[in-house]
Length: 220
Image (cartoon, rainbow, N blue to C red; front, side, top):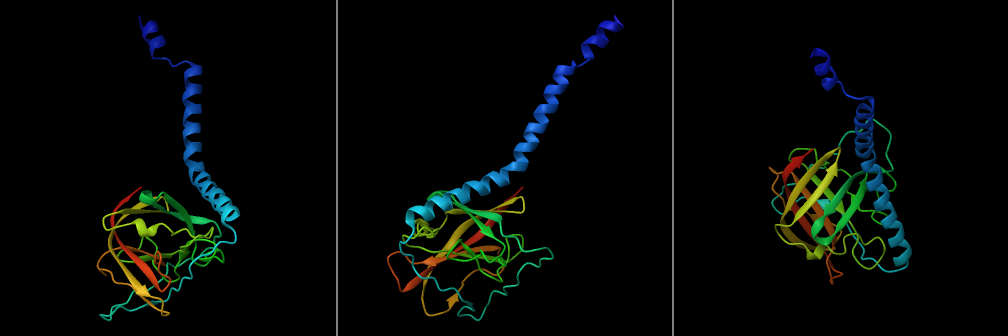
């Protein structure tokens, strides 16, 4: 009787090998996810640049200043101790307009509005409480007009940032325009953790549109 019970409890080598292979496969998938995501975005950018090369983009003028009430974003950048990264460190995703775009270390020479969406130097990354993560992008018909469809967004729409293995969910709470006069005021709640998106106004070459979004959740 004891021998029969022992045989029932024993797991065959083939089952053990299958379970080990499954664990390895699942682990490999998660490790490669960020790499695959980055390659997909890079491939899209390449195809877009090939198709839209030579078409026009709206000029963007980003110079953050204090608002009319005298408040000001401190613009204290995240401190880095390692080398400058020239690959994507995170992703911006806006489901409503089917946009997914990687962003770079703000110190990278590729962090350029003519090549990518621009992380405004001095803005706070998403993991900074009560900080403001500021991203600017072109509108127009050029291949690098990543923010061309932002005009379709409204209050209540969701925006997501993936950064350092966490997903930050934001909700748009304010949209306003500013004239292109060499400076740009940001109006936000300084007690909230926010995301600011900036681009040229649709069908208006004299102004820029600012989208203020507040963080509503963080998931790992």
